[in-house]
Amino acid sequence: MKVARYGLAVLVLAMVCGLAAAEDIVPGKLVEKVEPTPGFSYALYLPSGYDSKKLWPVVFVLDPMARGGIAAEGFVAGAERYGYIVAASNDSRNGPMRSDAIGAMWDDVIQRFSVDTKRIYAAGMSGGARAAMTVAVSCQACAVAGVIACAAGIADAKHVPPKGLMFYGIAGVYDFNYPELQRTMERLEAQHLTHRFESWPGSHGWAPASVLEDALGWLRLQEIMRGSVPRDAAFLNTFFEREMEKARQLTAKGQRYEAYLVYKQAVADFATLRDMSELKKKVESLAASKEVKEGARTEQRLMQWQSEYEEPALQAISQIASGSQILEFKVNGVQAAENLRLRVAKEKDAARVTALKRALGAITIGAYEAAHRTKQAGNHAGTSALLEIVIAAQPDDPDALYSAAREYAVAGDKKKALRTLREAVEKGFRDVELLAHDKELDSLRGDAEFEKMVGSVRR
Image 1 (cartoon, one colour):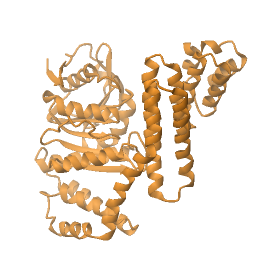
Image 2 (cartoon, rainbow, N blue to C red):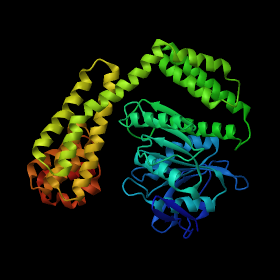
Image 3 (cartoon, rainbow, N blue to C red):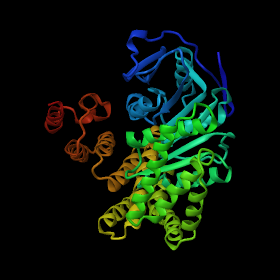
Image 4 (cartoon, rainbow, N blue to C red):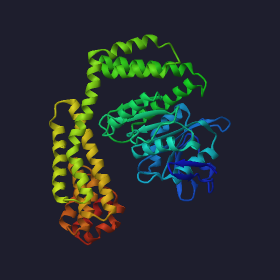
């Protein structure tokens, strides 16, 4: 049995019992549910060339909503190309860290498969990224060599990355956590830790499979640099030329700051693998250019604008969550969110549009998280107020509309509940089982309009 320390808590990693049938696990096929022990499961992908006679690197993946299959699927292409085992928990989710679930998966994979214990990685998205980082920082027995953090960085100042840790940060351009990942990169740079940051044209969520594949490719590059795997000249040349082509294309588009960042990263990535003297000179020259300096200033302005845009609504959310003057602060929060959403459509400056979208994302997740807390506390008025702020920011979100309808039904506002529920169905809500059996909608049962909605969703 392995023992790992998570802060003040002690995690006892689960021993293997009740293993899934070996014939169910086929290399090259994503298995949605492997049960290491009763009550826990994880999704698994073994590369098609998996052979127990050699050691394989493994990536343990944590999704904030315990969607192991979805999380693992994003890594499949990269795992197949570069030869990584992928295991993604179906139990670890946002909230109190599920050390038991992570431990059960971790222990099972390491005991059951031929794992290179010097090449163990943790990956996650949003709260899952934070959990992955917690494992890397706090679990010495886990020996995590690197972290792939999507949509969240190192938010806790107490999280001191261990020496030698590799960190690959990913954020959508419109992700409200983009600034957090930028600050994380600055922190890692100051600590001289191996790191890389990539963005993609999206918001808060898992990056596309192509980006995750690149992340695994970067881990392979670092493994070669550190001598963990044999040097692969073809791979190194392909990786380097791809980076150079990316920088050339950005330059051709007039994105000199972005090209500079690619060149700078290449210098760091290939420092000991090839002669980088000429590229270093190019990076130094670009760093002194007007375009690159302006690009760095724009990044700082984006963070400042986002903070200014989101502050009024976040203050209202905080006040509602504390239970003070709910009606007044609901009006303030809804108005602030609506103003930002409407401004996105009118704003001509692309940088400000980016900051506005990030702010709307922060407001959305902030209100959702606060609503979860007020719901647990039985504060239905506060919960419905917070969900109305979510709807003001994201009026096409069917889940927010459905959740708000539940609160109205509990409060006895049948008319408003039915109207909001109708909107949820029109915007794409399709969970017929929840709709048919949700006890918080019991006050609507027997109503002709409600039963008609259930029928329409069932079809």
